[in-house]
Image (spheres, rainbow, N blue to C red):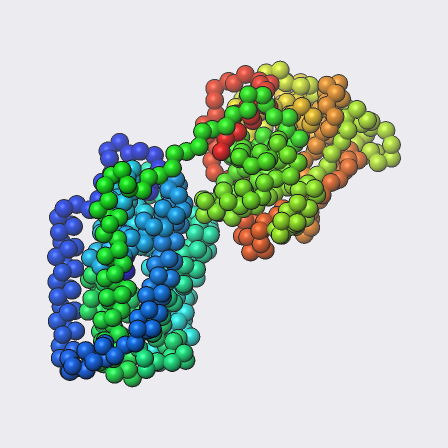
Length: 635
């Protein structure tokens, strides 16, 4: 991207490979047509500008330019440095979006040089792509084009937003305030679209749109970039005071937009004509002298500084980092929470490298650590989690953690909120006696009178289980996912599964995650016509099995707390019938904005998870879930 040409291409979608390769570069005929059109438009704009400048005396322009004090030129150089420092951050966001592995400092350096070069020569997408491909040694032309187009389009969106806001605050012309209102009204819904539709399907390809964090970063860096670039022009206009800065910023942003849309090198012609039209109170000679100095300092000097990088030999070019080797535990970790195995169904992994290994899943907006650390330490490495999230333009979130981890997060300055309560039992001490379990005894008697037989599965009757799951979803709605399991043969094959039969008909089943010290309830499915007490009998049988296996703890999983918890009163009542111990669980994020956005994103992915992969044929049952989970450990 460069401040010399409006972008017209969106990054090529990342997705399944097409049978025929899709060309990622413009066709020669189309490229030639665009270049000729840009040249014709540039010549026409320069002609219009020359006609306007004919009214000015050249001597006055030269006198205004030579009269600029040294301190103003130095201040303009400083503002240029700040602007390009912010410009380099655009490339950092783009490289994180495409997961290129380029170090942040190198990405910023490449971005500053590419933008400096492209805004000088024009045709920002093409020239910027060439510059990035030339500077990064192992970057393909296709990826360079995607990076440049991403930067160009996100910058144009940010430019449109700030132009609309400035027109609303300080319009250079009276009628532009209404234009600013209309612009904001059109642009603000884009945030909602990016949240609800983070991926667009284009045929066989899927296009991943920028995350909200990426968009927020672009908006922030664009604000700094535009303010510093406008300050360059402001310090070069001696007649302007501090009170004139907002008006000049509005005029500058609109002139910059006109220059970008023209496609001319540096917006030549369109930039100057727009400034002359929006700032009639400034003498033309002074304004043109300031624009000439601006072009020397802000356009020519950065392009000149980029030349050594563009001409550097191959062994001095920037290189992408290699992926760190995957770290595997040769012995499965003794997971304190069996439920962490749910990440195996959500393309989750174990984030290693700090003083604690953390089970994480990625959504379109968030990097979510589930539960407590899986091994290594009792407290999570929140710095590692936040850094990993930032490297992928995501919000960091800890979800369903214990009070101990919540205290650690609060001490680290994170915001913490109580989200759910977990029901736990000690199998060795469990009995159905006592007044607190009256409802449980009644349900178990109903299941017994109905002729229900419950036993642990040695092999899985997948056809019948799938039928029960389908009927359950028809009665209760689509199965949720991400933080809770869904019916899948290969997933269930690694769990402990209990089946409820009435004759030859399967009435229901439950599954449990297993670790050395805990079992945790996962899937709960019953036939719509199953007898009363079916689910109670299934869980009671599992409790007896865990007691016989001397498993110290059984979790009935969590139920949402607060206002949301009222929707799950029936589930809480079911778990209450076992008289468990209720333990609060928490979520934590670096700030309230992050926790709100990440929680909304989590809820969306839980309630509308992506489709599961095609199930395996007939997998073996009762495989070691601990070993399967350990295979996820990596960086």
